[in-house]
Length: 398
Image (cartoon, rainbow, N blue to C red):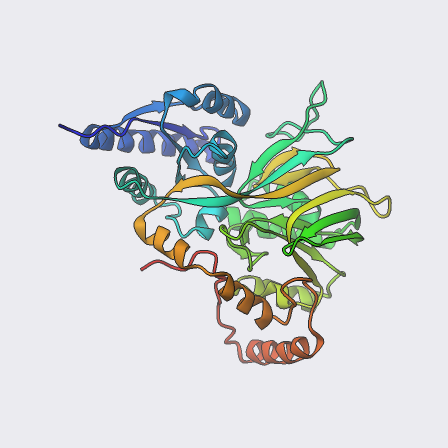
């Protein structure tokens, strides 16, 4: 007798990529139905006419499916995280977006539809999944949510309660997302890079009051006036830029990353080079801390922070609280990815942090190590042989 694996719900983004999203959804559903007939699971389509409508469908019909599969980019993964986060219901990912940063961080297939679907089906049949951390952003008094797709305020104020798998963008990075979302350039990485250059040329300084619980449970409180502030759960943004190279999906922590001062043009060029090598946080103008939770509000100095965005989708305004939620999302993955995830260690993360001359707890540079590290990096860059060095979030699977 054929084993029954229940029901797979699939959601895509039919409005993305000038029809590419609709095509990817149709192909994914067809492949899933073929494998469902072979292995013993049903397939239902819960795609709505908008992000919020699809999320509502996934939530309302939660009892009708055993697995949720999303087809698209980081925004669709955010939809899946908010639909099944905290429920132990597995999420399958067919990464067919412009950035695919969450999938990239997990070493899942990117823009390879058939390979991704086969991986999801194999994970269902073999009961192979991993539990990963999510960030959770919620309202504090005075904040309000905005429409996920447009960034516009609702007629009636709504509280924020949103999971994110990648990054919560709070400053220049939020504006970069906004520019990239409205760009007509064909490639996601190019859209993000061009938007980044445009924002760098017109930097605003935003004011933040930060109250953070560090990795050891101690509390810190300070004001920041900076153009960029990101709360990261994963390493990548913008189609592969490693803004937060120490992030891991299984450490129960988030990473605060910000610009501590405005870099020179030469330093910007160095930062771009290091960002693709996993060493941007060795740059002296970058601030960084690992946190369990953080409260962000407007400090009253500098410009008021823009509308926050999470995984490329609009969220709302400060003040907010952001928390790391351990093991909040169950993800269907191939066995090799599950093994690599289990083999990632805190020790290798600490080694990467110390390699870049930072104190793992405070995030501050250690002066002697930093000087030596800067000399070493400059020598490598001059020789043109800066080696890419992946942070230990998800080692490459064989």
